[in-house]
Length: 105
Image (cartoon, rainbow, N blue to C red):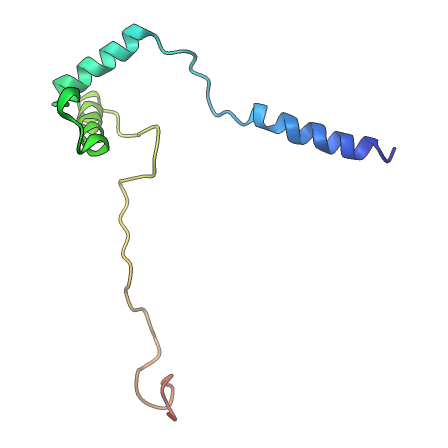
């Protein structure tokens, strides 16, 4: 019984990654890749001259293709629809007076 528990834990740890896949689309065919490249080229992407700004240019072309097709959700990366603001002071304690954090110094 003592050897059964560690063996069970080890087996479940080794089997867990096989269930972790979110989707299985299968292999992509050559024709599908070619069709996607043609769409990107129609959206303004030029693969032969994209050596300096590679990720930015292809992502912009992919965004244009997605906008034309009505796709607003990307398969990879964080959400780009939200906004964030950093460095904003949100204190309710006055900077002077008896409740100041600097009071008494």
